[in-house]
Length: 121
Image (cartoon, rainbow, N blue to C red; front, side, top):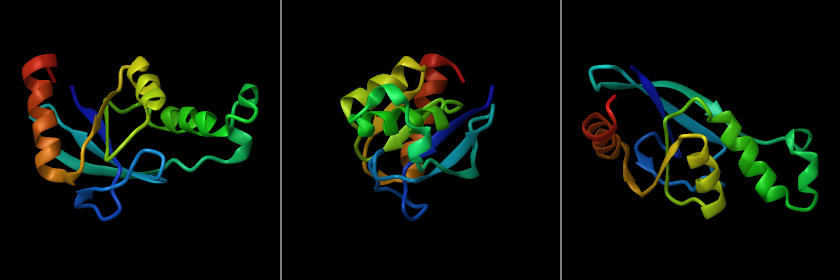
């Protein structure tokens, strides 16, 4: 079964943005045979009208939830840093979070290998 991985990158080579900084995630699609390709660039900017009304002054938390909604079809998110509550929110949706800096290709390959050995692709 294919799946998607969202990557926070400013240059298509490196994982160099934190979750909160990233407004445009690169989405990679991993095929059944373990190969991956760029599927799309996904904008995750948050408009004030999208914020949950019950968050009041906690707009930062509301933004994180809306961004998480926009990545809900991904199996994993890779970024250079991410807050605990955002990680918890993504994990509760079944989305793995990897906060690491480095070159995209070897990191995605390690994650694909991890999924194929432990979780099953």
